[in-house]
Image 1: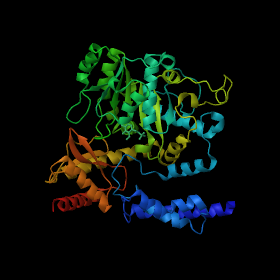
Image 2: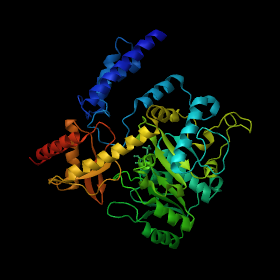
Image 3: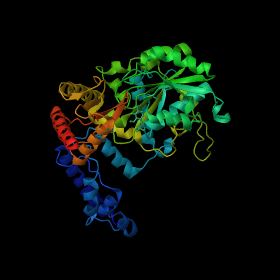
Image 4: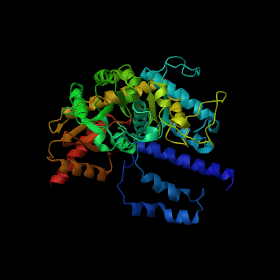
Length: 479
Ligand SMILES: Cc1ncc(COP(=O)(O)O)c(C=O)c1O
């Protein structure tokens, strides 16, 4: 195919995407349709395309139309499900540019512009955390500044944090293996990626000492001492505490400042998993949820949740740059050999990934279009809207919310449905109708319906319609 044909194909796809997005935004599509794999493979003609090729401007819609139709429609106001950003067009453009120039950057020379953008964006994030002073685009070395890298997701960021904390507490672990008596304190509501990271790093799940939590699964700092002593009595050496900002299921923040107090008293690494709620740092109004963050040692912070980038773009940030430097060791003569006079900074030695997408460019494009104030306003709007939705839902005689939301995550239940299994069945019914996409979560062993208010187009009217839909679906279940 000629370049001209490619241009036409790209234009056709762009037109289809524009139509898809505007229809979704107007709520003229199903948010989600649950179809089986065999149905979709057939509808998309996957086998034929793979065997025969031949996709052109003439037939692209035979593939694209069902592909878009059966996708999850994040731009639809009824998308109130998982914590995935409704992507800003800036992030989409960054994806497109990367898709054409493909500058993956383990080493600076493979993606100089993407590398410098990552460095400046990371400096900007560090500045919001309180771990960077100076010009974010100044590259003179300041030993007091923190450091960080962008990762393909918060899960990798959490794993990197565990490995950095291990290197800090046991510098020999890289060569000799993970000490078998090391332990981490974390609340049970910790995201599963952190628990996984503990096993990946070689500690085993017994190394997690679960911190006592309140009825809403938030960490109770006054009880950390007891957990710590129990671990010591068990012959374990606690080296790290992880706190949630915010917790995935509820969107409630652990009290970072008080946890930091405890960690400082015992010389423990404090990791804050701010994959979702770290973006509160952008807003003067919501920043208080992150009080104490500058006392932490590491922070996971996803841009593809509350900073409007498409998946993926996350960061692992360190207060102390030497902590990042000590995390990994590698011998790879084909790629890392730079000396003092090397041009640019290679991220490869500090990241799990070798080939890495131009992650920073996505966040940069959104910032370049909205500015940091615009980004802060977005966070404020989503948080404030969620509180308004809570006020409305909680005022209904047949709905209960277990807490006032702190972020844009809200749990609630329909009282006409009695047990956890029925609450799950209710969600299935809602999804079947396809007008809303919502999730569920258990809090204190009670299953709730759960909203992540990611879409700026989700309004109080959307929520009013959702409650009508829920009552209708519940009646269907009972009838
Ligand atoms: C608190 C928390 N940490 C980590 C993660 C994992 O991040 P990712 O999906 O970017 O790997 C999530 C995802 O929802 C999360 O909520």
